[in-house]
Length: 348
Image 1 (cartoon, rainbow, N blue to C red):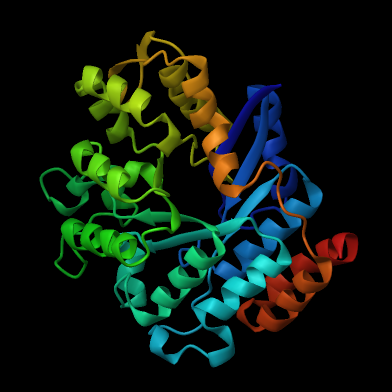
Image 2: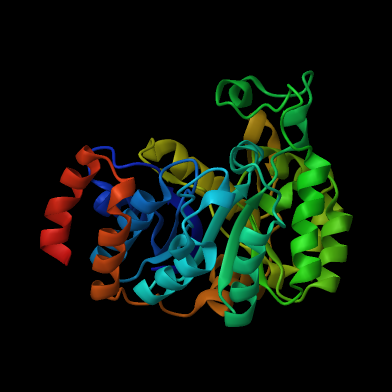
């Protein structure tokens, strides 16, 4: 087995309930050691996603999981007092989750909560995360072309990820709010997903790395990232070598989805790190790999994640998990509650 941790994968919805075994094929085919399953807060019901992640950890002891905060009421000024962000965070940590995942910086979700990333509700969460040294994985922003009618790709428009009508925060504004989190909480152990969508401006990322010792980015595609890596090949080869302790491997693989596409993504990213071969990548562009030395690859493929999250996943506290399900069951539909019954009987 090759020591690789895929730090960023998802269970999107219940589908047919086979999420407990869906990733087994992936681990076996790619011969990798561990996965980190991340909640998709807001875009799905965070409570249901957290519950699925909890059961996944119970069924797969090598699995890490990052849970998300539930926004019971939107606007969030009306959140019940015993369900504020800090209370939820503490509950999730007591259950045995390994970190927190935030999607609140994605423009569509940023618009839904109607608050900026530095509001009191979220700032209280960052304070606790920084104090505890908990790992925060945050999706913040999207590719800058999603705001441009002439450059937004058709697939992004079809998925509702084109921000063209003036009702969304701008790319620059979300970037500013995210950097403000770092300014206010300089020791927070944060990983910004998808290279913080800065592949066209890595010089800013270098500045942030210099200022904030616990900041990392992950390498989950965005295919636009890898095109930019190729366009500035010599610069990025030096960048990856210099900052190999700030980069974390992930694929964004999602259940349910076609395994074949996910396997292709894994191959593109790992080959890019592993060898200097030229192969077809995103947009059918040829991409030349960096061919990093083994010690650099080991940091990116597993070491940096373990240093931030732990060399082994936390165990689920079943009593705390049952209490969480009971407390937040009012968020679930009747059908979702029915789906949960056999899992509760088997694992709790």
